[in-house]
Image (cartoon, rainbow, N blue to C red; front, side, top):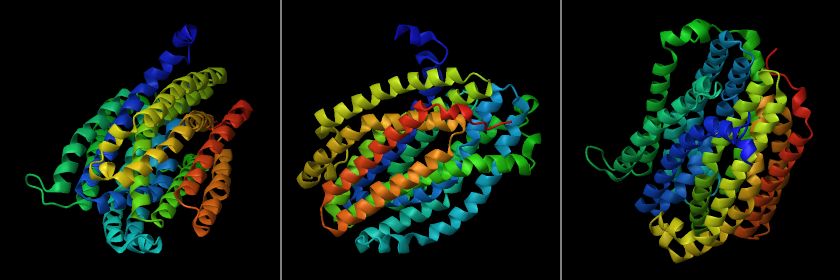
Length: 451
């Protein structure tokens, strides 16, 4: 273990690149978590509405975000290969795609009322869900553009900048969230709409920081961040070749979770509120570890670009050790100390029926969290190598065969909340085992993203 710490691709290298991303996504987690906590304390209907609406909004955003975030792999491989002048043009191809996606998301934002009514949610909850969905989806183009241009830093392994920028966004979002939900100071009481608007304002502030930092004259000489603005059909097509499967894969994964949430919503407000609380705690454990997934994708991409794939394999193993340590600790916390965590949600967490059900559902989270570490690490590593089409096919099959069909059957047969959570656990565990097997096959060594 000690020899692995200082080796190339060892724990020290993983932490140097990934820890700022973990802290960065930790700040994003705080933003979403406090959002849920403030809304839970505001009203039971608000917390019941924000999770399905937020997941649905992100469902439509994630395809575009997953596509443009593949710019990270291009930047990583060009950096590893020493072809720094190609970084700016690659970044701009993602920017053009992100701007086009904003138009599509603005059109989708009008579909909220129909979407949630079709899901069979209570009318009072549908109204709140539609308001949250409309505002967040209208502003989601900002988030997609932010995901794209942050690759300028993540792909080069300069992740501290990303950490600082996201931390500043969190410092703006948390007080703004509280004030706009509850009507504090100069802000009117806006409830769930205030939570959505505060999120969009924070995204915009983060994007402005990136624009000021990246498109400086000092970055032009080496990286061509200004002169590389032209649309390059061949490079754009290559980004789409790898980025679109990444976007589809991201969409399918979120679709499975969204479908699960909508099925739970048809069981009743109690089941939906307990599930939303538990999923919020699950995100608290999961989202920071996405930083390790991005970090290993960067390290594998740089190693492939430099022609040293063994260093990428070593980095993936180091990342897995650290991820298992964290996810195992969180699983233990969910099982051993659920009450203090549930108490953070105010009235829903103190409600005997909601809290009792949530404690039992946390056992499901604890069971699949450790195996979920395999998906986080090896899916990120496969992306860094360019082995992305396989993941898209696996996600499609798993979503249909392990979530959509058995979930719909469980609802039709009236098997209850635990049957639906069994479907979710089976879906997550299967993905972890399949991606582990794919990585061990070494097929990823055959792929090339850049020529």
